[in-house]
Length: 426
Image (cartoon, rainbow, N blue to C red; front, side, top):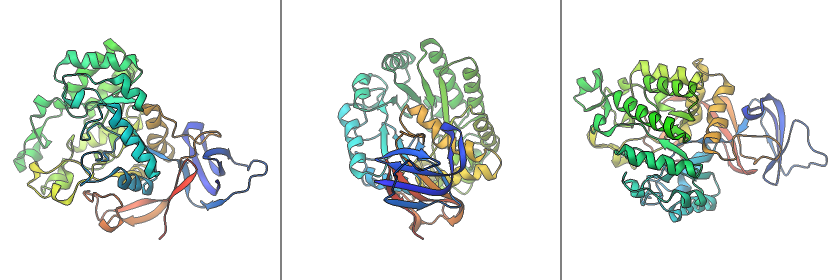
């Protein structure tokens, strides 16, 4: 299949391209950007006038629920939602049932995604068997099965010796360690940020120190071992400062932040809105603005969705008893575009934080439109306004605090390996 995307503004941070150019695709690869190769005859022509053409988005954290929680969502349903959001590569944490602690589970997830043919899925392997925090998984086998990193998600490894051994094992096989920094003893089963709002609502709070203490402990081990480490879902300004210092000192550490932590604060929980029950919790306005600043300085390299689809009942209990997380694949791009309107990032920086940088963190072929590279492409209209409603959501989960928000930025086409997998039809 040969595809020509014409008249769009091509933004490819990986190759410093930003201009009104035509993009030419053949046999699943980019063959030229600018002038058509000799004899090129397109089977499909896409008019991208007044639109932006960029690499397919790369999401560093998306729970797909399969295997084990198909009543919430499936790999196919969420990959379809990803295609609608311009996302072509998804990284899923190992918190499936069973956990991604064997090559069989990792291979199952990859095969199911390949069968759906809507997005690529890169699973993270579990650092410990069953995420128990006690017994190391077979990381070498997980690497062979397709995992480029390992994580224990929010299931803390309390024993520093075990965490150290896990980091050493990961470093041996060139695996990135993904850390969700939260000290479980300081978090103490809290549900919101420990502060004025938690006191007013009478909800158990999670102090900022729960994150900073965990970051400090991990950085000490990284300095000793030298393992490549990525901190997922930063929520406090102080933690970002600590990582900035570590990067300055030459430690191999990176970080990301969720899109909702860049827009919402603890004040959004004031009416016990369970749609704002997320982990880590929404922090203060100062933290939100600080995270924006560290993102602009490149200390925080990427924006992720932290997509967590739930059935309706999961959000209907009293706040502290509801499931954490929001459905977020389809709002990742428009929420990131808001940062451009707010003057936090330029459009090129925003696209880099959704394409090039997360692809490099994962170590996968993505986020690049150079000739010869895989043709994963997102085309979007940056000036298209729309209102998020339940009937617009493609994900099986409709749990989001952004319902009825007017959003700006609509994906019009998504191509996976040169094959159109989504086209917006008003």
